[in-house]
Amino acid sequence: MSKTLQQFLAEQFSAGNIDQQLSDLLNAVADLSKNINDKVTHGALAGVLGFAGTDNVQGEHQKKLDIITNEVFIDGVEWTGSIAAMASEEMDHSLSTPAEFRRGKYLIMFDPLDGSSNIDINAPIGSIFSISEAPEGKVTDESFLKKGRSQVAAGYVMYSPQTILTLTVGHGVYMFTLNLGTGQYILTKENIRIPEQTQEFAINMSNMRHWEPPVQKYVKELLEGETGPLGKNFNMRWVAAMVAEVHRVLCRGGIFMYPRDNRDPSKPGKLRLMYEANPMAMLIEQAGGRATNGHEDILDLQPEKLHQRVAVFLGSKEEVDRVTSYHKN
Ligand SMILES: O=P(O)(O)OC[C@H]1O[C@](O)(COP(=O)(O)O)[C@@H](O)[C@@H]1O
Ligand SMILES: [Mg+2]
Ligand SMILES: [Mg+2]
Image (cartoon, rainbow, N blue to C red; front, top):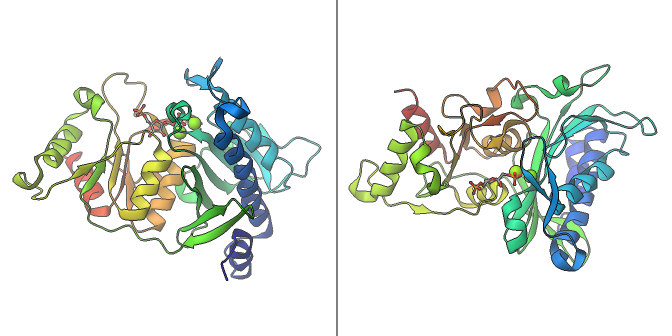
């Protein structure tokens, strides 16, 4: 018989890997993702496409779906009794659990809609979440600034031909596919392992002239293929949604890179540490891969700001080791 997400979480609870509050929270995230999936699937019919006419704290133009999915996340988790506060790409500051709901022991951070530029062209998009324990007492933005290694659960939902929820609670990586007939997430892949070697890379090549020397050198070698020092040909992919790139890496290996570049020194990379890089790094490490910022493992970085950006190199270990070592020279 196929295993549902609820059954999987009940097993993880029995094994002592998660407590009741975390189980409730993960079930709530799964439920709200079905709501997002519904809106995404209906697109123009649901009136969710196009710009909202507002900017987020990072100065990015918000799409209607960025705002709608942020509200779906808030409504979906605030009542669970599992969280003390939440933070999101789309909110300037963290939000404590409203007084009418029971305060729980966890913090959740999310990118409610990842891959915003794909929304209007009906290409893959997703949601990313990271869960850690809340401190005692009042929660502020600073309470969220803990190393990624302290996450107790992380995952993403990918809205594409299939809707897939990928999850780790620190004991391997599991994928669940949404059965649209029954509305249940069914376990479809378990104990995912990323091959150590790969011949596939993903990077936005249009930024090449802005990259730092180690990345220039590495990508040049990738492009030289079997005639270069790496001695093998590489294929390239770019979906423009981190969720889809990480999903591909988890399914068949590869290296995904979003390096820092020299356009704006105040922005060390494009991706956000707290609700993009950290949860993805936890999934990647749990699947036997590696995730660095070119210098250190992402999970060991001490965050300084809620919306901090970071360079990202993640995926098959051999290639992430290589590009990371180039940063040392
Ligand atoms: O515009 P580019 O350079 O292709 O960037 C794509 C990257 O930006 C992102 O879309 C940023 O995430 P948001 O859509 O949540 O802002 C990543 O998912 C993706 O990897
Ligand atoms: Mg994103
Ligand atoms: Mg987003």
